[in-house]
Length: 531
Ligand code: HEM
View (tube, rainbow, N blue to C red):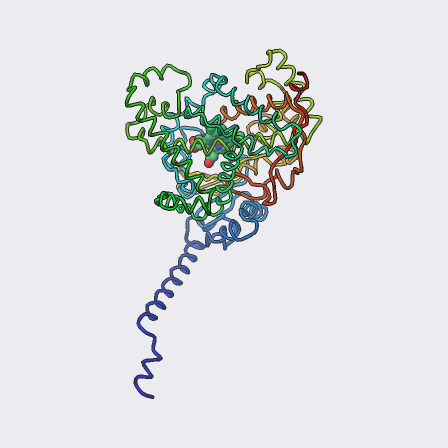
């Protein structure tokens, strides 16, 4: 053989490098697997070995396995097999035991940090939901809490009332309509208008603009559908948001209108903050001093400005992220719950009658304008909202927190710094706590035990629990009472299995992909009948 032929059979230098790289990568991955299985601080915790080895295990269930967002089901199966404490991926621990909820989601001053991958997918690290450090979160949360207190919400009933009137008009306009009313879109338009007005002093008009409302719902839907993917690659959203969108806008408008709509919301919020800042530079500190006297700050930004936060925590970038945090956290959750409550009531005519009788009574005694506190006292009505919140178990994703100290669970010492999570459905749908847990039974709340009340956790618990709870209750009581008092409704082609029960975890639980939404026909407008 000629010497040239020998060289032809030897690998070229590029191929050699490639082979070396592949070998190094394989070696690295093998040693990583060995480390995670044998030497990692969580190595001795129960769970499937494959899940302990790689996060691609979760990727499979959330992305590849149809219809997506299936890892939360797998997590339940892991608990069935391995017990109440499992290691769902190389670096996390998940616990299914209601007794541990108060320990993990402890109140201040117990320190709990958030886990970066679980917060960064929303790409709003400067808003309270995305804030990792316990101490920074405390300061930021205290700053905006005057917007969310029960007193503030109660004082703003006159602000919410016109939006309730508009909602009623939407239902009235649909009497005898051939088209069914999609409750998710209808209520999302309502909750979004209320949030913009209450939090930012902006009069949006989604309720009177069906097309815009539908487009906004599609954008929210797009976010939900993308969530399983964002959970696997949480850093991606921040990178996408950092792109120069103006350049891509025509393309997005054409091919991804839902995403374009979402980006538009970012621009609107930026503009709102910028308007606020320039207004403040004109009115100066006088208005802030005046503001301090009010129960409800004029806007979320006024709340931040009048707070004790340091100057660099009051900059426009932070206000913009806090604004979006509140808008995204509040619109969809509230509207879904309204639609779900309506479903359960229409699906249970006996209970609906009791609720309607109560509401009619309070409308009579208050000359047609009952306050929220009167509605909250109605036994069947308030128990129905509570039961709907329990059954909805809105947040299906596990919610990891990090303790700065070791935590002990039944003899297992979980090292400080480990992300530990629990899942709301494991508690709210637990048959041992709530017998026949998947049934709508509002009367279970009439004689609820202390433990059942303690385990009513749809808004979470502890330092990171929902800040918008009172706001949510306020807008829910007012709107449901007004609609139920005036209209006879009927469910239209809506079933529990397809349209209400969740089958996918997209942070919030999503129904089956074939769902067309919770829809109703408006049969009778009692006010029109009276005329
Ligand atoms: C039925 C309605 C609602 C439910 C079931 C709900 C549920 C929750 C839950 C479970 C959390 C904790 C999430 C986590 O730990 O990652 C949360 C946080 C939050 N919610 Fe709500 N929520 C509702 C309505 C609202 C409304 C109406 C607003 C605002 C107007 C709001 C604003 C927020 C904010 C800003 C956070 C982050 C709190 C923090 O990190 O300190 N929510 N919500």
